[in-house]
Length: 134
Image (tube, rainbow, N blue to C red; front, top):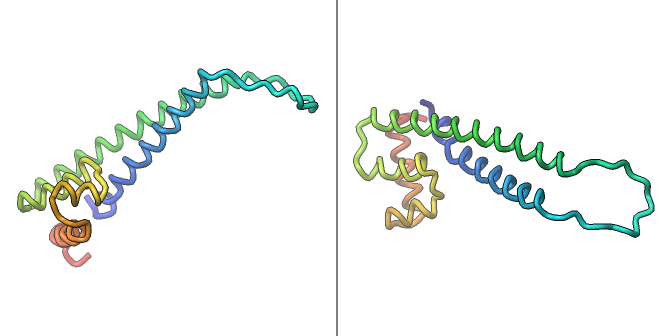
């Protein structure tokens, strides 16, 4: 596993959360009644907007499922990679929080009872241990 692959894990989790938020919005939109606009005088074609929204929901659900499977595989690979190295309990904990649980730096720092700068510094030390000379 490369350093870039490891660092891509939190970004993948963020992308899934964005898609889940969009999905929630589309589902809410699909159950709301459309607003009537009587002042519009332009002739428009009749489009069944509910079907467009439903298709978007189905497509996005499939995309999210695929992204979740990929993220699970990335996490599994990272966990195996971390386990294959001689890391202290604290080093492993930091990596797990950041890459397996995808916590933000603020959350990682809080869980480790240190400042955010210290958490990032410790992370850089661990990454140097995993990828010397990078």
